[in-house]
Length: 293
Ligand SMILES: [Zn+2]
Ligand SMILES: [Zn+2]
Image (cartoon, rainbow, N blue to C red; front, side, top):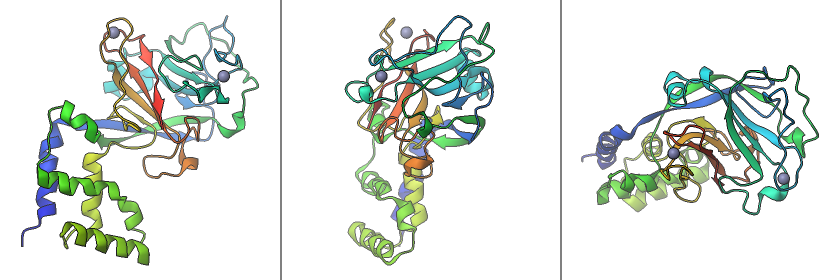
């Protein structure tokens, strides 16, 4: 008997190949690094004459959620982002972010790209609400992986699945990692799946490959494809009204490998959701950060 699953995996791999992108997962160390390092939390680069950024709603100091030193990024992204500067996202850790704080350009965040010249020699971290929940993590490297678009984006990209592909691809949502646990419950679940789809030959590796092909990486990552929590949400550039491009994903509920919130670099900052830094390709100073959970 022909293995339908293997055939579908082969056809999806071919179909999705033109949309395969690289993404880079930050590899972090539990330290702050320098004022111009790429990092989560910790001390940002600040201009000589500027004070620590305050929340536009509660007026308390915001957390440096992310700083990216553009000239240290993988070449492709570095060029795309103009080759230099620091991208900084400050975000309020107080609950004023829960109303409409998830929207792009909301007042409980500050997102900017600045040139790292004429800065303060010393930066002191002010009294940030619940700062101890966000210990600084410096990015010491990037792990390069392949990434594929979210299923919702495929039709917009002109990719459509056949009925058979759809039927098999749906299986990617059944959490292969959990099925791999080897417990009685997970073995039974795999048997049920095999029966449901009438594919006795399907194995956990097939499910993993299907998941790899049909879901963008979770967790924090640079470039690749956004993993949307609620649906496609690209902001428009306030200058040219064009759809902004995806740059960085911030995830508060886990890493690319796990759904364990303590594995996140910014646990619970965006509830259990995903935030996306977007940038206009023509107006690089136009950047947005919407998040959803
Ligand atoms: Zn606030
Ligand atoms: Zn623009």
